[in-house]
Length: 133
Image (cartoon, rainbow, N blue to C red; front, side, top):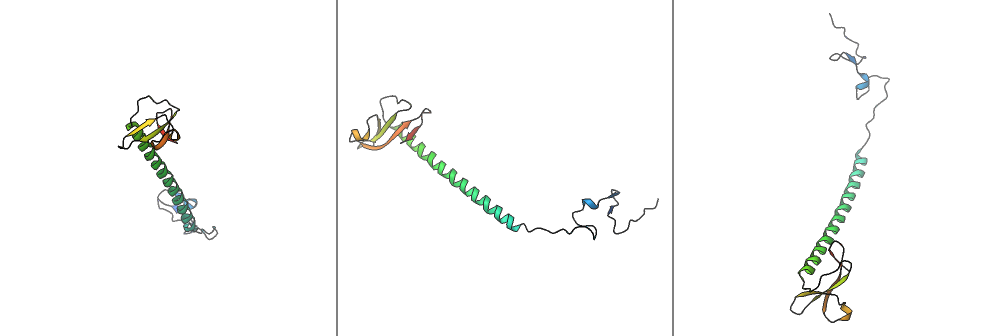
């Protein structure tokens, strides 16, 4: 059977044998509304600026937390390497001192009660982690 050609103003897909004007991303007749492309460059620039600020703020937050963790690790290493002849109790405050020969020791005596070279005061939390006061 002979294929009948549709007029040029009719949007017909001969492969699928369907009218597909509604599926086209462009106007298919003179009466169709005009399609204007929106300028998305300003929106993209604002979005890029926002995400850059957000990522930078998160990075600085993580960097600060990392530095705090490194400091906490150094203090804990220093205390666990120090000499002490008692078992520290969680929830108590202890004081770290350094002798003239460079050796460190942990004590329950506060710095204002003695004349030792004080490094700092530390609190032992329930997780057995020393926190500087």
